[in-house]
Length: 229
Image (cartoon, rainbow, N blue to C red; front, side):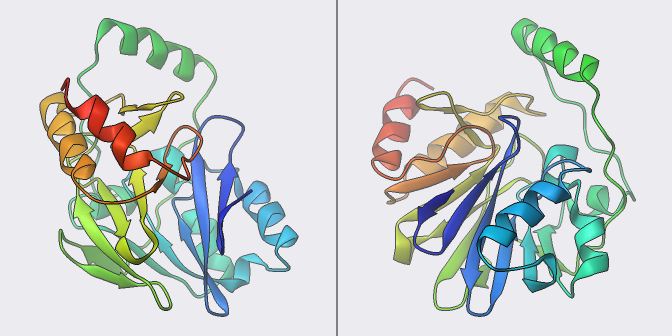
């Protein structure tokens, strides 16, 4: 699915999204689905006359297993630089465990449904570059600003590409036809604060960890929600 020129979304069966961004002759993968989702990434690359070996960079918005599951496999198949926030990198390497979320009653029921369906653990993966708030990532002509948005996890990040009016929110924001604060947060108060911070940026398009991307009016839609947080 082409979202913007050179930017493609991968919908893993309505569960979670990842994104492929063309950066010169190589590709940047933003988030990576569950373990076992590699065939879907390969299929999307195939439609673009590309292979997994053409992925040169993986940027992970946070450490949850539905976003990092295929990283170890991709690292075996391509020379990639994997990036994640300093606070989530140890979890991705399986050197630490992620904090448990603070769940509402509705979230508890949703979590039970997800767990009943089975959730494959992510194998350990290396992280070559540990990111901090304010870091920049060269996307082959465009620069992405790393925005630390704690709350969903301690090391959650968003990527802001001002030159393209584009925001990758990770799970700090989800979409149910309109933007909402993501669920399953380790610190719900900080998650709301992070949502508000992102809503202050200027952008038209937003790519979410869960829910279809918005190609126009995304910041305005988020600001309307932020007024009530």
